[in-house]
Image (cartoon, rainbow, N blue to C red; front, side, top):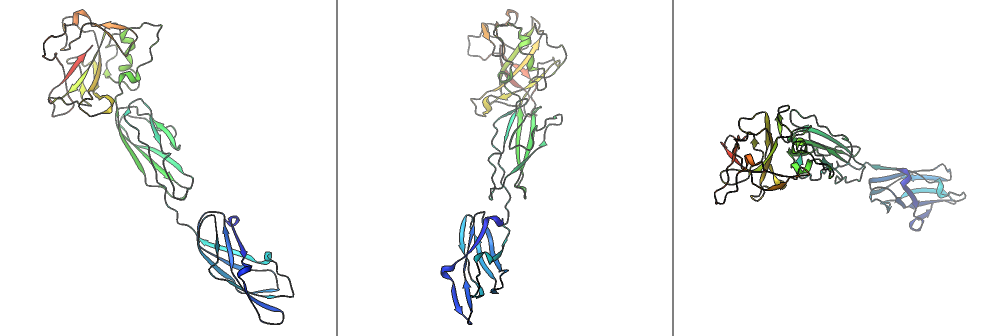
Length: 359
């Protein structure tokens, strides 16, 4: 700090009085130049190695001094100088003191993340954090809450900007603590629920030169670390006899439902999935959607699912397919809605909801 402060004599405003044949008394104001940060209650004490100068009042005050400023003293030093000898300004030695500036804790900030999906990296951005004194900041990220079977961690927990990949669906809480070298800021918590991702968002990229089976194209739905369809028994789904059921989940009032548990009746080996809100919207126009993979459907049973005739290009594969004739019904020409696939709901107040399936 000393290298940012300098004191100079204000000769133009100095008052001198002769007190003897050779001695004069001087009341000298001084000017403080501060090339650093703001300071509080600045004062200085004068000393000298020169025997020709006697110091009668060595102390001056400057009060609070702004950053990058020059501030005159509020009072003067009093010295007596024998004018037979030289007293250069370099013989005025100053000891400068000031009170420490109270440090304020930094303010942390976490950028909004939007909808979080299991298996998809969530950005953690603290670049909006600030400090009143512009001190350099450090960052500490930690995971406070996660599903019981989750082992997800933050790969770089001290970075200003990092990521976190939820490995399971469910509730998470991420905490950020910002420090300015002296104080921690108030901890900030980011709470979110990791949902099942839209299948289209995580489907492997198709290879234009390859033709593959539907079962192989859609195996990501129930395989891997973050499957959309969970609890599928080994070898329960045959890749050469696979069907994908997709539909909207609505309640009796026609409102969309998110997070509903969906199974195929009497087929626990095919596991379950949960409905999702398309686009993350809760408006009536945003349909809750679900995808469920099944295999080895008997030709005499439609499981309450209605397939529409005609080719359909799957967004999850590279080929166009038609509904199997053995499981297809002609599209209805009446205004009556198509049959529904029943499923068990995960809300006690819902006894039965409906999936409007489509091939």
